[in-house]
Image 1: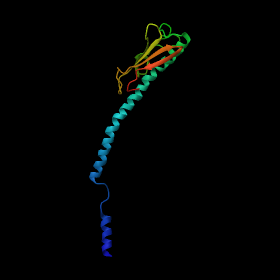
Image 2: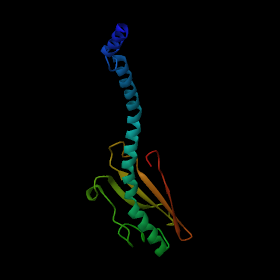
Image 3: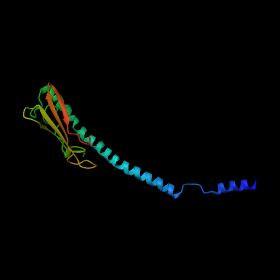
Image 4: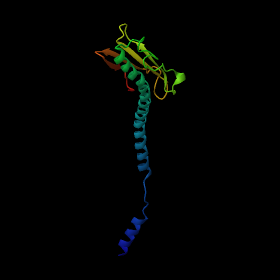
Length: 153
């Protein structure tokens, strides 16, 4: 009987908790997961910021589509900035700091193409060279759009 009692006491007196090696393994696993997750998170935030750049073209895109339907042309002389409902050109002075500029230009001489160029403010994973360019083509009374989306879209 004494022998059983002494075995119980020994097991109760044994230290409880994690060893140093176990804690170091957990810290190493967390470090590896963080090293993998951080670049993915940075890429995600850059894409989220670039969404603002893409959205900056929305008002111009919609207005150009309406102008093309009404006027049957995408010529800058008819569907340019401040004409037939097209917004004025956006510059750094009159936006919220997300973009440097939004401009419309004519794609080809026959006025069936138009180009919307959005230049972003550099920062947060976005470079000045990461311009968003939409090219609209008018055919059969319909404007179709092509973009230059890269890894940020």
